[in-house]
Image (cartoon, rainbow, N blue to C red; front, side, top):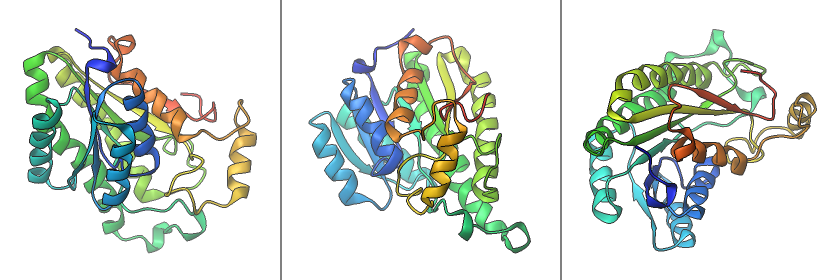
Length: 254
């Protein structure tokens, strides 16, 4: 079974700004009903939903809180119907500034745990809340946002990268378990994006270095990442699950 995007309800976490906002806008452009999840960025999320039209609305929930995620899922279902696609983009508070990153000898476990809580626990909470309705329908799409840094740690963000690597493992084990129910689970992994709130602190020289290292000679944009997320929700990916699609202009060959 597959559903065209314009017949779907899509929940995007961390969608008030940055990459999440670009993903929400891409799905709205293709005709989906879009739930714009946010934790703190209420004004940005509501403004985005307003721009996207009547088939979009903002929903607050901290993805680390399973009960809050369940309430959000119920609210989205009441408004638009049960989500057919979940895109988990939410990120713990973080700035991609290599000069300010924690080195291993000074790193506290809590820094890694913060990313695990949002990335991996958040994904688990979303899956637990969304999968029952997906099983009933015999259709579901779960798209998790990863990184190319665990293949090419040009800047060793130990905390962020460790959590994303764990999320890739969950992508594959969840795909194996949920596949018989018609639910696919895939990951879209970008490199440094130009530009999001998280990457705004990155020096221009780093962007230039990355651009010069890619076959396309440019840095990937949030809109380009968003289009890859569309693929995994579309009928064209109906036989694809457990995969990690790297979208970084060819910087990393997967």
